[in-house]
Structure formats: C-alpha cells, structure tokens
Image 1 (cartoon, rainbow, N blue to C red):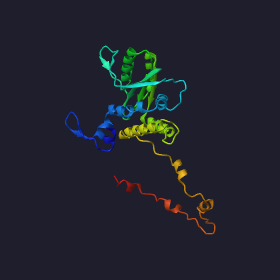
Image 2: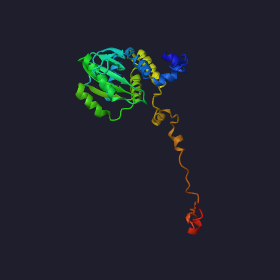
Image 3: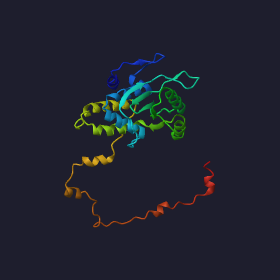
Image 4: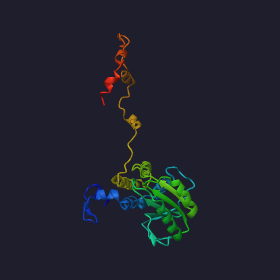
Length: 267
C-alpha cells in the first residue's frame, strides 16, 4: 500500500461526508497511518538495528550504556488496555514495543499536533495494571512544551522513564544507521536493513518529514580543480598602478532647513 500511495496508484478514499480525498493527503493527517507505515517495518530490521534505532530514540542520540533493552520480542499496535480511571473503560496507546528486559510505550503524533500530558498519564496508568515489567514511555513527534515538568510527575507516580523525540531526529538516526548497513557493508543483514530503512524514510517523506539538506561543507569533496598554480591565478587584481582618486560626497547629505510653516501644509 505504501508504494501505491508513493506512486499515486492508490484509489481515492471518501470521508464520512462522502468527499473524496487522495490517499497521500489522508496519510498526512492521520497519525495511525504514520504509525503503521513506520513501525510496521520495524520487526523486519535485524536485532542490532532495532536496538540502535530504539536506543537513540529513547536517549535522543546519546548512547546510553546503562539502557538495557534485552532481546526484541514484538510490536503490539493499538492495544486496548483496561483503564485505571473509573470513568473510562479502556485506553488505547499507539503501540507497545516488547523487549526481554522492558516495554516501550509509544505515543505518536504528527509534527504539527500537540502531545497530551493527560493522555500520557492515562496510558501509563492502564499499562501499570497489566504488567510489572520496567516501562519506558516515549512521546514521539508533535509538540511537547515543558515536558520535563510532567515527566517528573509520571516518574513519581508510575516509576517509569520518560523520553521525547522529534521526527526530524528519527530521520537523522535512520540516516546514521543506514551508513552502517549500506549494501556493500560486511554486515550480513545489511541488504535487508537498507531496504527497510529506505521504506521508512519514504513513509516519513509522505508525511512531510524529509532528510535535512546537506551542509555546504559537503561541496569540498566535489571540487575538480586541484592544480595549485591554476587556483593561484584566481586572485584579486593589483590596482596599485592605477591612479584612483577619492570623491567627497559629504556635500550631498547637507539638508537645507525647511520652513516649519511649510510643513504645516502637509497634514
């Protein structure tokens, strides 16, 4: 389905009012489609690549030696959990990523949508009824102003770790990972991992999340002229032999005094 949307081959879909929309337009507004397209491909990565990607998302790029994930188990999408709130029957987080040593609860938002701290609290409360395993909460995407204040409250209430990560950071982590698993690498899983990463990046591009433009420093490797004698010819011309005179323009900036009575006419 992802390839059909990318190449414009997916049929249009109608909303509840009967209005037709392109799938590519719908994809940009639905966080569930983004969640499925990106994380649905996660289990097809090698275990090393899964650990690399998830660890960086939890630590925002820093390599945390003490963060032990354990063996990857599975991804569960939109689990229906019994609510801890008596006024609510159930809650439905976007996904749970199960590892041997912990569970990562992920709440996904598109870049333009705000994260909900009340939603974080409800989901962690419901998960606390289901498991006694170590839980790490990840708010992925969206806007999360003053999140540290709410993270401390959640840590005190549920004894969990809380992380936030932006989608543009995920793109950077994928690009970093792809350098290690390029098809010509000695890594046995490289060919498969590379194909999965390409698909994940394309899914993010559909949502308007692109790889950052390369810095100008990368142009250094593109220079074709290496002859120092040739480059030396490209220097400023010597003007010492020319007689140059300076022109004093100061007289032009002397403004005459204007009669105040005349200014009164410009009302």
